[in-house]
Image 1 (cartoon, protein in one colour):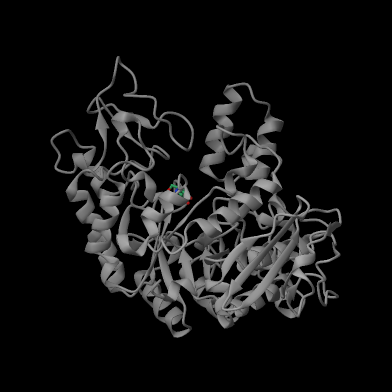
Image 2 (cartoon, rainbow, N blue to C red):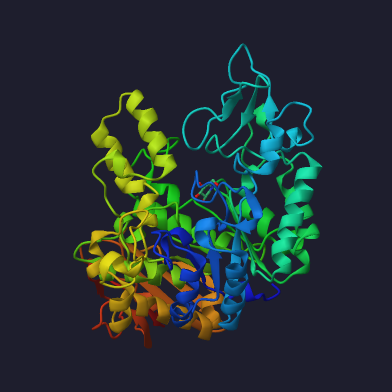
Length: 542
Ligand code: NOJ
């Protein structure tokens, strides 16, 4: 495989609304991010994936864009954005823009025009259909609850919205729409951005009349056209958000020969703690055995015909240390365990803001505390269906998106140093204990574990290129894998449970050198007879 910078990269996701406020309005902004670039440089990351900063009425916190060439008023100005690109570059950090082009805001001028009537030149930028028997055109549903069709009184037609009704879906079958998208991408590429994270890109090939949403028949034609017309000429990272990707599908996107994307986000591991065939809110305990199998499958299935991204967290997911670790007594150990497990795998790791200091979920007691449109809509719909309030609040506490969106915890001062005003979403009350300042000052902190992992990746081609091997003859709760590269082998071991675990894999012998560990007294590993403490994780050379 031809080597690219993004194969060696570690990407840090910034959710600007919650990262750092600079002007006291309680909302994070671009000047806030500028202030924290040195912190990110110290962590050692290569690129920032910036969640949307474009002009937006914020029905879905910026994932509803009303102008792709302007900046959200609360976040600052285009001059701030240009400065951010330049200042990041000066620290060897590239800015990856969030490309949200499956839909726009209903306030985007294209939709404002389209709504004016059937003859408007912008009408076909969106998906309009006549009623069927006086009702919605078909049974497509919105990810944010209810039907995916909204009735437009003036024209007597419905328009499609796979997310909120204020996020009308663009009609990618219309060549004019695709040309608009290429133009706006080129606008950002010319500014010198480092690439794009592509929001729900697997939906753009939808065939609404056949109720096909993900993986539509023209999807890959569109992406090849996009590559040719835009970023193909640039050395950038492109990552598609693809909820429905199997390894075979991931190769279609990321095989370099096909001229599409650098990599995709696949969600197979993320879906393991929900009941099959149901929604994210229908919880079940994580089957650890399946987690190992799924991650191992992705490590080996792509071969040289694709590239993995590695992540536990993002702005849509609960915090990993609360979700599958222990945010109580084993907070530090389990946060580091997830870091060690992920960062020594093959692929490009992503860190979501606050993950590097072990930020946790932020439980609520009442629906009035919830900001997120997805959870609010779900709550309303399921209450009507007869679910109990208690059950629904439980599901929101486990899976709700606000968990990841509470303000970044910078220090122990008021509002965790996030804002001098009133934060748009309350700061997690644990900020006095969990914050970046404390983490930086403590050499044994979660932050320094991430920093060390990033350094290990930079200094050892094995981490980037080594072959992956899952060791199966271990207890269910133990994740043990090897990486092989040019005659060298590393072993990564992790006990995903609160109970100690005994491991016996004599063929692996004794370790030669400890690379990283989450218990300070671990010095070596003897795989003939190894005992792992609660949430213990380490990597050794064999
Ligand atoms: C996926 C994004 O990550 C999420 O935050 C957003 O709500 C939907 N796409 C719609 O844009």
